[in-house]
Image (cartoon, rainbow, N blue to C red; front, side):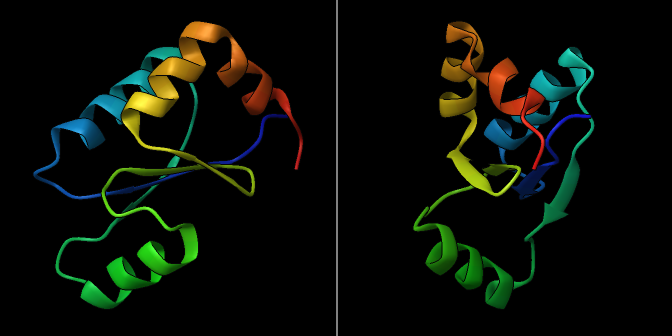
Length: 87
């Protein structure tokens, strides 16, 4: 069993699209939560994770950052470890 992945996205965000493509390529299922048109949700995410932009990527109960951060985790092999952890 792998840790659940949640990606908060906006439709016009190229980094969001790249993050989804990365997880699709890896065969990792994720829950996508669009924040378009929902300023209250956007503010909640900003306050909860202290992250000002999308995507906001959460693996298990850990916010790992955005697309650049997840790409770096993949390159170093840390992403596979996070995904393998059961939460």
